[in-house]
Length: 96
Image 1 (cartoon, one colour):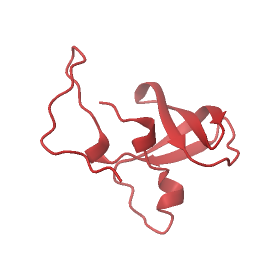
Image 2 (cartoon, rainbow, N blue to C red):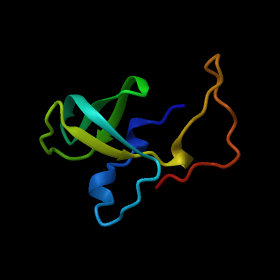
Image 3 (cartoon, rainbow, N blue to C red):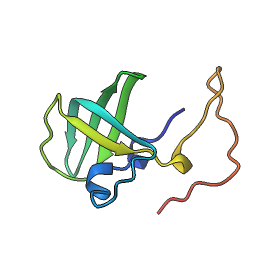
């Protein structure tokens, strides 16, 4: 399964008033790459074998080793078979 870094939601900041943890992942910040008006945050998680990358559009300082909460909207996920070929979508994703 995969998701583009810009399709991941910064769950804690965008949903602070909600107690909705469906499709939420909490990872540990391993590195932050600042690129002007956006940053890529590289997260580790014990159940994910590669870094999980998130793109955020702000310049807030984030510390390596801190927890970072993200939402993973199912409609933005891509599912692949064991050869790496993407399965066809049954619905088109909704992008704003």
